[in-house]
Amino acid sequence: MNIEVILSPRLYDGRQLKNQHVSVAVDILRATSAICAAFVAGVAEIVPLDSLEPLSLFRDRGYTLAAERNGEKVNGAACGNSPTEYLSMDLTGQRLAYSTTNGTVSILRAADSRLLLVGAFANLGALAETIAAAGEEQDIVVLCSGWKGDPSIEDTLFAGALIDRLLRLFPNLQLVNDAAMMALDLWHCASHDLYSYCLKATHVHRLQRLGCDVDIRWALTADTCRVVPRFMNGKLVVDC
Image (cartoon, rainbow, N blue to C red):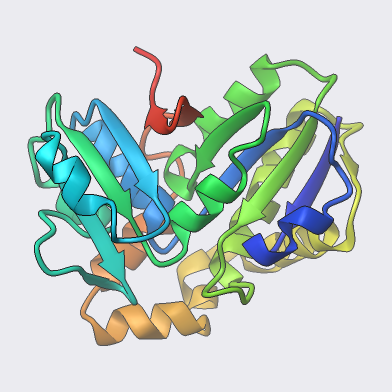
């Protein structure tokens, strides 16, 4: 089993693992954390969009609009990308049309994967188990969303945490690029107090200015849910 970490969607085309692979799309603050929370709140499916323009078309088809730009909910959207907001709602059976600054861009960027999963600290354990269940003979690409093309501390830390979990299951897991080794080292440095370490992250500063500290703390807490969203036929779903 080989694993590669891509620190930004801009680097995805240059990856080493180009054969059929499992991808994990990650945007800890907050898109993929919010996706997990939305499924916990009962959402039936989520259509990820990399721009705002299609939202009106999905609204006309009965979808609930969920959209965020630069950390703030878009005008006219019922939801943004706050995981704690989703957890306060009853969204049973609803379908979301979902567009965010970074996370949905990464999901769609990796749509060519044999299997595309959504990763967050919230579903870290369940995600590792899902990857393990797919068997050892596979390549894994962890695609971090970062912030508008730049790497981010929190996504890199998650990549390291996932590698750490997978190494427990597969001791012979091969880290094929420096980004994977950097991510694992960063995780070893920060895992004892993840929140305190992430206080230096630029997106943490941005969200704190917006009053979103409760989201930050939730998004940095591991194993709070068991859902593992996967991308199929243009939408995210979870197994029943």
